[in-house]
Length: 178
Image 1: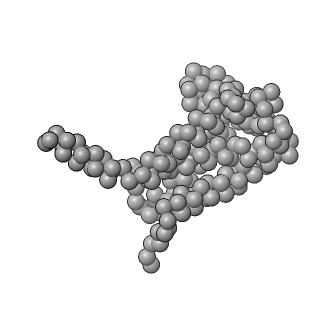
Image 2: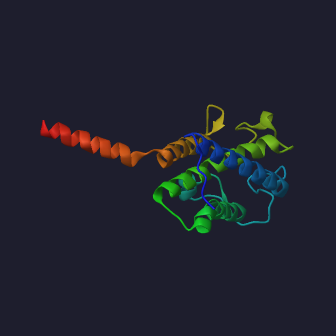
Image 3: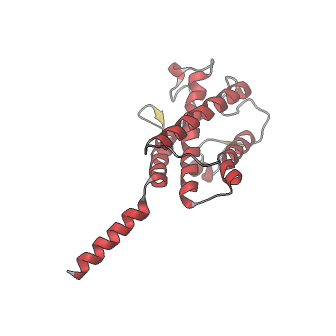
Protein backbone atom coordinates (compact mmCIF):
# COMPACT_ATOMS: atom_id res chain seq x y z
CA UNK A 1 0.00 0.00 0.00
CA UNK A 2 1.47 3.34 -1.00
CA UNK A 3 0.93 6.69 0.62
CA UNK A 4 -1.10 9.23 -1.28
CA UNK A 5 -0.14 12.85 -1.04
CA UNK A 6 -2.32 15.84 -1.98
CA UNK A 7 -1.75 17.03 -5.55
CA UNK A 8 -1.82 20.74 -4.69
CA UNK A 9 -0.13 22.78 -1.98
CA UNK A 10 -3.40 23.75 -0.30
CA UNK A 11 -5.10 20.34 -0.27
CA UNK A 12 -3.14 19.10 2.77
CA UNK A 13 -3.81 22.17 4.93
CA UNK A 14 -7.46 22.29 3.77
CA UNK A 15 -7.98 18.65 4.67
CA UNK A 16 -6.34 19.19 8.06
CA UNK A 17 -8.53 22.26 8.72
CA UNK A 18 -11.65 20.27 7.82
CA UNK A 19 -10.57 17.52 10.24
CA UNK A 20 -9.95 20.08 13.01
CA UNK A 21 -13.38 21.66 12.48
CA UNK A 22 -15.07 18.23 12.44
CA UNK A 23 -13.38 17.07 15.66
CA UNK A 24 -14.11 20.45 17.29
CA UNK A 25 -17.78 20.10 16.33
CA UNK A 26 -18.04 16.63 17.87
CA UNK A 27 -16.15 17.55 21.02
CA UNK A 28 -18.21 20.73 21.51
CA UNK A 29 -21.34 18.60 21.34
CA UNK A 30 -19.89 16.24 23.96
CA UNK A 31 -19.11 19.21 26.22
CA UNK A 32 -22.60 20.64 25.75
CA UNK A 33 -24.05 17.31 26.90
CA UNK A 34 -21.73 17.24 29.92
CA UNK A 35 -21.81 20.90 30.99
CA UNK A 36 -25.25 21.94 29.81
CA UNK A 37 -25.90 25.64 30.30
CA UNK A 38 -23.21 26.00 32.99
CA UNK A 39 -19.98 26.75 31.15
CA UNK A 40 -16.45 26.13 32.33
CA UNK A 41 -17.57 23.12 34.36
CA UNK A 42 -19.16 25.43 36.93
CA UNK A 43 -21.79 22.85 37.99
CA UNK A 44 -19.66 19.72 37.64
CA UNK A 45 -18.42 17.78 40.68
CA UNK A 46 -14.75 18.45 39.95
CA UNK A 47 -11.85 20.09 41.76
CA UNK A 48 -11.05 23.73 40.94
CA UNK A 49 -8.07 26.01 41.37
CA UNK A 50 -9.64 29.45 41.24
CA UNK A 51 -6.65 31.79 41.55
CA UNK A 52 -3.00 31.31 40.78
CA UNK A 53 -0.59 33.57 38.89
CA UNK A 54 0.19 30.76 36.42
CA UNK A 55 -3.51 30.58 35.51
CA UNK A 56 -3.30 34.21 34.36
CA UNK A 57 -0.41 33.34 32.04
CA UNK A 58 -1.40 29.92 30.70
CA UNK A 59 -5.15 29.67 31.26
CA UNK A 60 -6.39 33.16 30.38
CA UNK A 61 -7.28 33.90 34.01
CA UNK A 62 -9.86 31.10 34.13
CA UNK A 63 -9.97 28.55 36.95
CA UNK A 64 -8.30 25.22 36.32
CA UNK A 65 -10.80 22.42 36.79
CA UNK A 66 -10.18 18.70 36.99
CA UNK A 67 -12.56 18.29 34.08
CA UNK A 68 -10.59 20.65 31.84
CA UNK A 69 -7.20 19.34 32.93
CA UNK A 70 -8.25 15.83 31.86
CA UNK A 71 -10.08 17.00 28.71
CA UNK A 72 -7.10 19.05 27.52
CA UNK A 73 -4.69 16.21 28.28
CA UNK A 74 -6.91 13.73 26.45
CA UNK A 75 -7.13 15.89 23.33
CA UNK A 76 -3.35 16.43 23.42
CA UNK A 77 -2.93 12.65 23.27
CA UNK A 78 -5.59 12.29 20.55
CA UNK A 79 -3.82 14.80 18.32
CA UNK A 80 -0.55 12.92 18.81
CA UNK A 81 -2.19 9.57 17.95
CA UNK A 82 -0.88 9.63 14.39
CA UNK A 83 2.69 9.80 15.68
CA UNK A 84 2.20 6.53 17.52
CA UNK A 85 0.31 4.89 14.66
CA UNK A 86 2.94 5.76 12.04
CA UNK A 87 5.86 5.77 14.48
CA UNK A 88 7.17 8.85 12.70
CA UNK A 89 7.94 12.13 14.40
CA UNK A 90 9.67 15.37 13.43
CA UNK A 91 9.80 18.92 14.68
CA UNK A 92 7.81 19.95 11.62
CA UNK A 93 5.07 17.44 12.50
CA UNK A 94 5.10 18.46 16.18
CA UNK A 95 4.73 22.10 15.14
CA UNK A 96 1.74 21.17 12.99
CA UNK A 97 0.20 19.14 15.83
CA UNK A 98 0.57 21.99 18.36
CA UNK A 99 -0.90 24.45 15.84
CA UNK A 100 -3.80 22.06 15.25
CA UNK A 101 -4.47 21.67 18.97
CA UNK A 102 -4.53 25.44 19.46
CA UNK A 103 -6.91 25.96 16.55
CA UNK A 104 -9.05 23.04 17.70
CA UNK A 105 -9.65 24.67 21.11
CA UNK A 106 -10.59 28.03 19.58
CA UNK A 107 -13.08 26.43 17.19
CA UNK A 108 -14.40 23.98 19.80
CA UNK A 109 -14.97 26.72 22.36
CA UNK A 110 -16.74 28.98 19.86
CA UNK A 111 -18.93 26.10 18.66
CA UNK A 112 -19.84 25.37 22.29
CA UNK A 113 -21.48 28.81 22.43
CA UNK A 114 -23.06 28.65 18.98
CA UNK A 115 -24.51 25.14 19.35
CA UNK A 116 -25.45 25.26 23.03
CA UNK A 117 -29.21 25.89 23.34
CA UNK A 118 -28.55 27.81 26.57
CA UNK A 119 -26.31 30.35 24.80
CA UNK A 120 -26.33 30.94 21.05
CA UNK A 121 -24.42 33.63 19.19
CA UNK A 122 -26.50 36.45 20.69
CA UNK A 123 -25.20 35.64 24.18
CA UNK A 124 -21.56 35.46 23.10
CA UNK A 125 -20.42 38.56 24.96
CA UNK A 126 -18.26 39.52 27.96
CA UNK A 127 -21.26 40.20 30.19
CA UNK A 128 -22.74 36.73 29.56
CA UNK A 129 -19.51 34.70 29.40
CA UNK A 130 -17.76 35.48 32.66
CA UNK A 131 -15.09 32.78 32.39
CA UNK A 132 -13.51 34.51 29.39
CA UNK A 133 -12.02 37.40 31.34
CA UNK A 134 -10.11 39.18 28.56
CA UNK A 135 -11.87 40.32 25.38
CA UNK A 136 -10.65 42.27 22.34
CA UNK A 137 -12.93 43.56 19.57
CA UNK A 138 -15.84 41.46 20.86
CA UNK A 139 -13.89 38.20 20.87
CA UNK A 140 -12.07 36.48 23.75
CA UNK A 141 -8.39 37.44 23.70
CA UNK A 142 -7.48 33.73 23.80
CA UNK A 143 -9.10 33.30 20.40
CA UNK A 144 -6.92 36.03 18.92
CA UNK A 145 -3.73 34.78 20.58
CA UNK A 146 -4.26 31.11 19.78
CA UNK A 147 -5.36 31.77 16.19
CA UNK A 148 -2.38 33.99 15.42
CA UNK A 149 0.16 31.65 17.03
CA UNK A 150 -1.55 28.65 15.41
CA UNK A 151 -1.39 30.29 11.96
CA UNK A 152 2.32 31.06 12.38
CA UNK A 153 3.09 27.53 13.58
CA UNK A 154 0.99 26.01 10.81
CA UNK A 155 2.79 28.10 8.19
CA UNK A 156 6.15 27.07 9.63
CA UNK A 157 5.10 23.42 9.56
CA UNK A 158 4.27 23.58 5.85
CA UNK A 159 6.94 26.04 4.70
CA UNK A 160 9.97 24.69 2.89
CA UNK A 161 12.28 26.62 5.21
CA UNK A 162 15.35 24.45 4.72
CA UNK A 163 15.41 25.31 1.04
CA UNK A 164 14.92 29.02 1.73
CA UNK A 165 17.62 29.05 4.41
CA UNK A 166 20.04 27.34 2.03
CA UNK A 167 19.26 29.91 -0.67
CA UNK A 168 19.92 32.72 1.81
CA UNK A 169 23.23 31.11 2.84
CA UNK A 170 24.28 30.75 -0.79
CA UNK A 171 23.37 34.38 -1.50
CA UNK A 172 25.26 35.53 1.60
CA UNK A 173 28.37 33.54 0.63
CA UNK A 174 28.16 34.89 -2.91
CA UNK A 175 27.87 38.48 -1.63
CA UNK A 176 30.90 38.00 0.61
CA UNK A 177 33.05 36.83 -2.32
CA UNK A 178 32.31 39.95 -4.38
